[in-house]
Image (cartoon, one colour):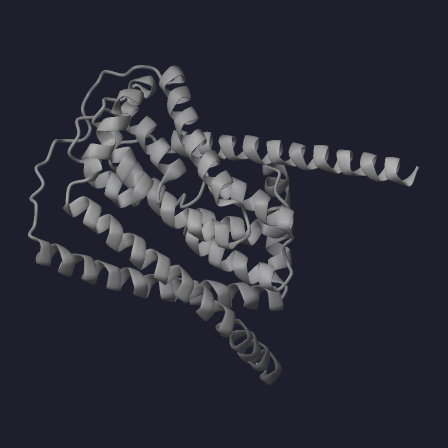
Length: 320
């Protein structure tokens, strides 16, 4: 390796460490706090009471009322929590596909909304978009998916209620592993992103994915963030996004456009594979969320166009 190249790498790493550390600490505070609160909700069996209130709505999605607990667990906690509840239900492939699509649209709502809000978008807007999209796609899939044989994919399973201290220790251990994983991923992503930008690879990625980004209605310069969010997840994509914003690489509209897309469709590697493994139909879950994301982004572009037209008209009238 040439001394000049080595120096550029060291300089990039030093430059990215301070902002990455701040972002990492902020994300970890939220993650640990929300995780602890959700652990208490699960331990004291509070979620079923909340679920009972929303279960009548689920007949419009072709799902039994018991599926509302799985959706609610995913909505408040994460995909893994929803999967744990799904394992106790008797659902066929059609029902699983509908339920899993809804979960993928609006899982980890509290944590991911906080992360999205940090990038400068409206948290309320993100909650409305994600929740409404999940409900709409659940309703749509119930209409367009053919009713199958009703063969049960998931099997009912009994779950043992642990005492509080074993539950707390289990949470501490899983949280420690999660904190370690998040820290490693965030530092690695931000360093890799900075190196790719320094050596011109980001421009190549943007150029290669430009047709796809334009099809989705996204700026080509968001290509790397799109890849990160789709492969790893929204929180890690947002961490990389914060670094791009800090360096002035993304404007406010760029951030809103990419967030509108990835808030519906992210984690399309791990989460999609996991939910496909339990019996849901993977290609349907992927394509219908991509389609929903594209509709939302182009609708947002229409909002921008109308606002700009109104602003120009006001300026013209003022000038006259």
